[in-house]
Image 1 (cartoon, rainbow, N blue to C red):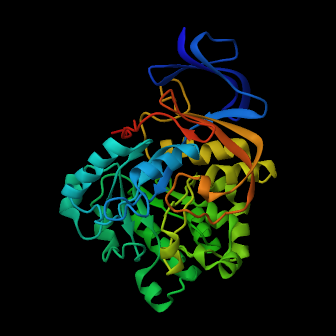
Image 2 (image 1 turned 135 degrees about the vertical axis):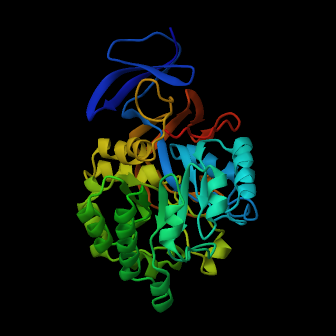
Image 3 (image 1 turned 90 degrees about the vertical axis):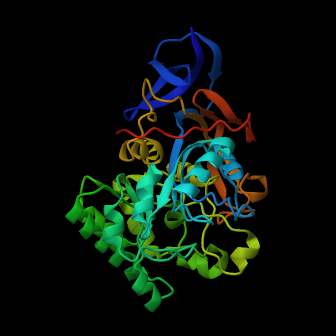
Length: 407
């Protein structure tokens, strides 16, 4: 007798199975085509599919001195609402996570307030001695200034001092000064520099929010096993014409040409990770020119809409939002297999809904996709075997735990 059994359709190695998932002590204990007995049974409905909870490797949760923009509580509730069960917290907070003291404060805040599981980061910018004391799950380097204004003045030295995968915001500082509108070359030159130094040092590197045709080409040409990268939904679903119509869509790197967007889609199968780069600001701040877009509650629905249009495979979505992040960042307790955490979501593939930000949990109060009609909706989110979101309502109290990284 299992503590919990989910009955319905799910994918295992690209194949659809109509069966049962057994859960005990917060872990997946069995996949079966034959009925399983459970103390509690969740039976999916027509058009519903069970998939692993999403791992979003690029999330700005603000808090500290910016809790008017977002808090760990509001942001992780928004994540659960969108089917995300693990978030990677970005360190360009106010104050930034650049010392052991601030890192420990961040860890304590997450322990008390997070509704999702989480990974903690450390911002590297000439603070190598502090970096080694932080014991972060991953690291972040800004090659050029973004929100927060902090960037690395010696990328190679900063990159050297990390002992885990480094997530890099690849925009060249000097080119930003020359071209403040940040055209493609700003990203491309930074990607080339990061790739060259990574080849030299052979250290794990993750390139954030790749947005250009040339940048993606460079990465794919190298094809180095220790280099990973991500693409965001806003760079897949929006372009610079949208920005011209709506200045609230300012983001770094900026929205690109239709040609860039087409190239991203043409190579979608080669993209290992899709991440939101959820970066909330208030509407007033956006109107004053703040760069960043909220995205936790629309990320999966946009991808499911693309699936319904035949643009992507369902298995591809599972890989890019869950399986690959767990594998690439070496998360020991995550993955859609026996023995891993039972982070599961039930999605209705055919449910249509309209993006109305007033119904969201994020404090952003707006969405770049406001008014869009999407097809595909998260109905239930389970974190380690417990229902934490059902029919748009968050269930229970914060119970997020820090991920476990393989040594």
